[in-house]
Image (cartoon, rainbow, N blue to C red):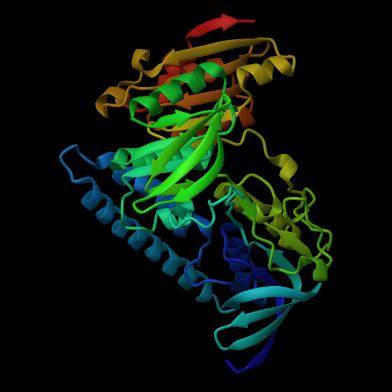
Length: 463
């Protein structure tokens, strides 16, 4: 490549995330000229296979396999090597899969808009100008390190991306933030052998859950040796000779915590800062997300935003569904939209996993439903022998059911295989399958799904 080159594309995709690469592949196979720009050769495939869901869930797997007699540091170091090998395999596969399509060109470089149809890309060989008839922004999100004195400057502060790539297991890990990311990493590193302390600013973790389910989840984490300090406002971080000191306020009193590593788990922000979106006339929200309509079109009708960058739920499967919406706009009937999404499940990958879908008991009441509750501890569900077979009987299964029509309004499953069986519940909700139908269905044995036979039969109260 020379110092300056120009490319014309029917479709220009900025970012190699799930949604963008899916649209790029499909449109390339349809004969369109596609150019995809990714700023790092370590991020082919996007966040999920490189620094997100795949490596972190692989670490959940390896942490769970560690026996008490296994040396913590050695086991962790071996696990990181194995996980990074998987990430590389998936990264290479993503690149080869896309670049092998005749009409698709993958460029590694940093893109920024110069007008609504054109970007300038800085590559290792110079500058490249790319014009696209249609443009997709798929740059994802990046970790937020909040503005706490000393936190950003501390040599012990790490983001989730940095932590999973280090081969040294921190003996004392402090996590600032008790959301999805913070609790998943607390569970992972606690099982690897770190002494984990979570500092959460609000009075209650898992505030999106009903109190009964949240209490069980918090008890499981505590039993794993994870210390959770709620209502803790971190005021300063100071580096010392052997670690860092975290200063925080709680209930009007000053406290300190010593740590070898500090994970900033205070959320992720849309990665839009360097795109020069204002030059393209693309509007953004206060948080920097690209403003989109229900068809994922930005304020410029030929520019779409997919995945985390559009400010929606930060999940890979949402990005995949974004690709379906955009493909329907570009090569379909133009009917599909974000309004079609119903009963979208979520999973917190602690051990055992916690999966939810739909309304909580409190939300259902607030919405005016007359409800009945089916709730049962996993250890008491006779139709779930798999829990005993794999020696994981902790947790609870809870369903919120409409008392008038027997439809499932929501569920919280804290149990082995919850990340799988929640999909069955979500499918039932989307298609109006009654709770009784789910309860009385015939399931393979021994599986976790057959727990529905008992759990949905145990109506604990009706309002």
